[in-house]
Length: 284
Length: 285
Ligand SMILES: Nc1ncnc2c1ncn2[C@@H]1O[C@H](COP(=O)(O)OP(=O)(O)OP(=O)(O)O)[C@@H](O)[C@H]1O
Ligand SMILES: [Mg+2]
Image (cartoon, rainbow over all chains, first blue to last red; front, top):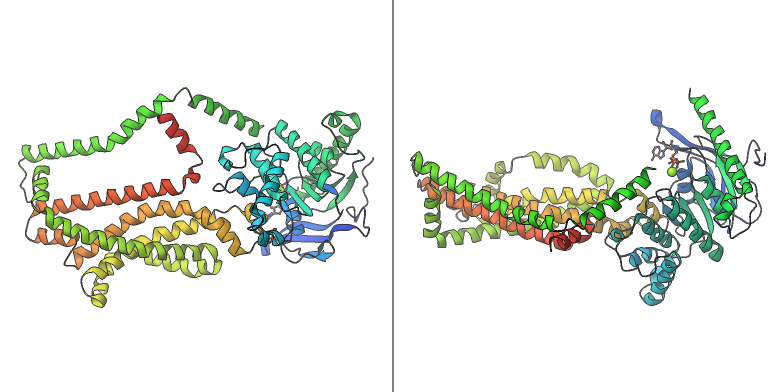
């Protein structure tokens, strides 16, 4: 079996100097008293700078919670989170995020939606007024690269779900973040749009080399996009295994039908299936 | 699976809308004329009933009597209506400012919510008629109690709607902005307030009619001007047609100011209806 399964520290595959995101034996509990839910227990992940990591696992195992820890939206109950060498003790201020729900602002047109982070993130905030033209061009280029050329002055309700998700991706990238956090960003899209957006994301990542943490339920998506796949246990979540994807970039849709690609998908599927049955066994 | 289904559904409904274009226009005509038809029908039945059962004038005047009274007292009515409109608008203006501030405070700060919400509920449960005598003790009869009563009745829906609007900000969007380093104040101004604007404008048309109710109530109890006073005065002289004329005037004012603020609402927050009206307009020609 190609999946490495050390008992502990399964996520610490590459604890080198160049770790960009370090999540060290982190636990997270929601609520207190009888309603206390332990979402994560002893989760450890290291992510190199510029690495594309996918996180997969059974539903409700704490993947979204993990994202909130990394971006500093929540503090771990136990353990530490470090990003770029600094301990995370508040919202990161640099991360780009995109979710399943595009959450565009209906009263702004697409271009203004994409430019929203520039009004908030620090070096850009002060320069936006003076360099509006330049920033608008950047936003236009980004829209262009995701296939939304000419849609900048449309409002979100005039766009399809897939187009809104493209715009949401642009919004996550406009300030050139070092860290991109994606929580099931393509889950609500039809298969064709989804695969098209995989290619878009891969191209952007290859050009800009930002660090990506992608949460997904789609195992083909994980294998297509990621360099490394982390598999989480059922709740309380921790990393139980790591799978390196040995294929080079760029990857094409044709690659996803090759036997060695399909094998990895099957491997992952079996593994998650096992995690789910352990959970059911425990809860009975 | 279900996502794919939805997509097909929405496409299908688009296709159906186009060939149907004349239908909405026909519906639009009847929709617009329906209230007039019903009003006219009611008046006819009323008039006939008064004739047939020969109901006394001081019990139920016929629409023609009321119209005659309206015409006869038109100058006096106009003057009193002006006073009522003045106190209504003044109270409403205070309610807009006060309701907005209160709504933002309650919707923005959990502490304020905890502190103010029970008080607001308690206040809203008190019949405002019961407060007017107190206002009279403090301010004497006249304009000020009417303005305050109008304010007291109309700020509540504004505050509640603004607070509710602030609560509709998606938590995910808040996450996106916070992870960019946005402060709560920034989120309030960039997202919260714009998001609550449609709720705010929707509340205005309700609030303005409540302000009118407040003014008239106060005038009926303690005033020497305004439609409420006119009606009270007329009823003490058993001039029942004039009482009814006053009622008609109040109702007409209510409809008119409601229409004004409903128009303001559609003007200002077109984005909130997600382009549906555009499509509807286009269909209706
Ligand atoms: N705000 C909250 N309050 C209480 N419990 C929560 C909260 N958010 C999440 N949880 C609990 O924490 C656990 C992990 O939630 P999380 O959203 O991180 O899971 P997930 O892996 O993202 O799930 P999914 O794959 O369905 O998106 C769940 O069991 C959930 O019940
Ligand atoms: Mg989730």
